[in-house]
Length: 198
Image (tube, rainbow, N blue to C red; front, side, top):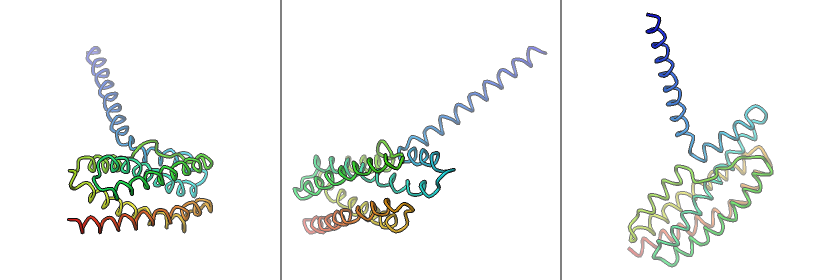
């Protein structure tokens, strides 16, 4: 009887270990999104000491994710686009967002803000979707993506330029806006151009 009891306890212990490991691995899967990982690192750093800084850090995480996404999509467009104007636009985006990313990394380091180290799940999804487009549909889909993406980015940076707690972050966001608006306007122009060509 005693032996059965010991065996039962051992089996129960093994089951609990398995359940715990299972729960941990599920949690790990959810936390592999680089943007979420960066947000959690910032939360851990600033939650108890500086809530305002934690809020401001979200703008940096958003901008880093945006820059990485734009850089990767621009590289893809330079390879896959059959339209010289779209390729030229992609080159401008690549250069501007690479410069913006370097500037962001410098500012993040000064402010001890963690940034994502790779594309987020959304960024990967957008890249995968675009990379599978047929050649004849690629330019339209890429330009549509640029219009939508830059609209969201402008709204976010306008909010940051008005509502960020840190004055330097408000200025940084305000400085980003003219470039983002130029990109958006050019994307809209190309959108119209592609419509006329069809």
